[in-house]
Image 1 (cartoon, rainbow, N blue to C red):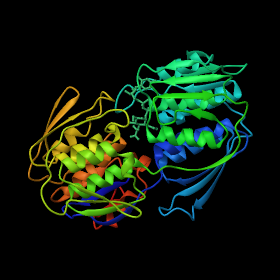
Image 2: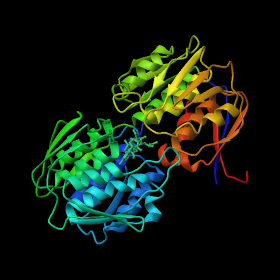
Image 3: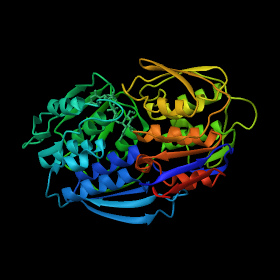
Image 4: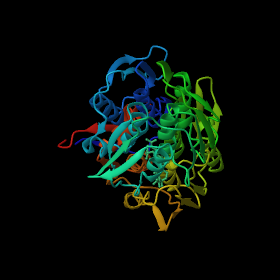
Amino acid sequence: MDKIRIRGGRPLHGSIPISGAKNAALPLMAASLLSDETLTLSNLPQLADIQTMSRLLAQHGVDLHLNGADPASATGGRVLELNASGIDNTTAPYDLVRKMRASVLVLGPLVARHGKAAVSLPGGCAIGTRPVDLHIDGLKALGAEIDLREGYIHASAPNGLTGAHVVFPKVSVGATENMLMAASLAKGETVLLNAAREPEVEDLAACLVAMGAKIEGIGTDRVTIQGVDALHGARHQVVADRIETGTYAMAAAATGGEVELVGGRLDLIEAVGTGLQAAGVELSHTETGFKVSRANGPLTGVDVMTEPFPGFPTDLQAQTMALMTTAEGASMITETIFENRFMHVPELARMGANITVHGASALVRGVPRLTGAPVMATDLRASVSLVIAGLVAEGETVLNRVYHLDRGYERLEQKLAGCGADIERVADDA
Ligand code: EPZ
């Protein structure tokens, strides 16, 4: 298994192209199941999770054609054509679902268009229990019959789904996405209340509209969908990855460098931008994205609490903590979305960080420096927080379990090395 070796202490200088968003691309790919015409997605990132979703869709009978780089894309994103006219299997098996929880996004489209689906229950996860009850309750409200047995969600709606009012008791990105897709083909009107407003949800809704869906209130917490009989093919460009953007912004700030994030959109991470500026980081728009710099002056500790969009994203919590480890003063970081998302804390502590966890909050007292160490993490964002810490630390950091990074960061070492980082991927026995 590969590792990543970093020799820290070099400020990042240069530019980094921002890829299409993993968390937008995955539901967009699932949306192809809603039509028998071709959905063409551009600006698709090259990631392990995209491959897993491709495998899942292929075993349902979707015909996928990957067309290499998009000539119109400044960031090298690829173009994928998906055609679901030949679906011959409505089961999403455990082997794929356990690898990637986002597999549950096929549930809504399959039951809406094919009247049935069996999707493995995802099971446990490194960052929290992550149940799927909101997906199930939402589909039940649209008239699907759901039976949980032998580790699978068996959903059926032989006469189709029917629109309904669905009030989510808790904001859920995935459940909102599943319901948007299912309701697009339901009979009559569906109203989703307390819907997730994340840019990735908005991107999915925009694609569904391009496919002929009738959706109002996109980007708000009240979304109304008028079901249609069929959706048609469309072309859609995947939105820029705001989490990748925020991650590299933190890396630039942590190392005291200056980096332009090409294709990065500050408007998608306003809460993060505000936090970075309060910490002493300069942000400025450029023609093709924005620039992050902390060429002068120290970082100051700031408090952060994760919330659903437009609040501070949980997917940038670990990276923010890495940034705060060497800030002046203290920083209180509170995680409200997932109950077990501090797995990076003991690893950061092994690099010299001073962090105390009290329930859902972590108190980070800034230290003058971190020191390199062998580290590993149990999820994607925790792993990349250790990369940021490694870029700042004195000496060598070796990050194990690199496959987590490969799920969500395209060409991470190349992008950072292009800005002067001393970072390389090494085979396990090297
Ligand atoms: C999406 O996961 C993202 N994944 C996650 O990114 C992200 O952390 C999360 O949204 C929150 O922003 C994708 O988009 C593929 P949720 P999702 O449903 O949809 C609880 C990453 O690192 N909940 O919004 O699974 C749940 O346990 C990943 O890229 C229920 O209780 O998240 C959590 O506490 C990690 N019942 C909260 O809601 C449900 O049925 C929010 O989860 C569903 C969720």
